Length: 282
Image (cartoon, rainbow, N blue to C red):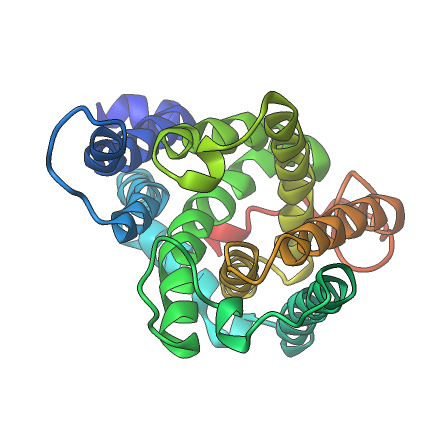
């Protein structure tokens, strides 16, 4: 097993990430689908985020021992996170959410309540700080430690940045499969909406690769962005907020390809030289 992990760490990583997340989601799927009579609360959805981070920790340890785990966790060092990129993720998400709120007022004729910006179907009303913490510490930390912290650097050691993001995409998308059977928003998707969701995830994978590379491999930056994005896109503030957030991601991804170049996807302009570093190992 150890030999297999060392020879095929990404294959083993995806298998364990799926097994942990899908195993945790299964009771909620069974409850929602009526396969059993146990009433599983909606907040159980957030436990599924444990899969990617668990797999990343396991295989960082198997492949590199203490040094491997230290390299993975070092990506969370505040000293590694450029303040400019931290400011960018906060301001850009808040600005997009603000535009969505204004569009809601124009189209619907009424402002959404402030509390609706952080209320979701799956969580009780915890208030803004605790709800934000829930999003950052579950799907933010849980997903990004695995997808960007472990998988992306290894893919970028073999492929260009944009190709690595695209290779990661189907594995990231398939990981969400159980949510289509337990999450009300996903369960209501039409075939057209599924295609749109996949297209958005494609651009999101490119955007996050650019953000990760541009911030010198800072997981703190991408986790904060992911938590803020999920907070507002899953809120009850109306349909325009997630629409504008998604459009902003797509637009930024296209701009990153144009300005930073598909080979490296780093910074705000194309730079000479090969920067396909294995950020997670330093």
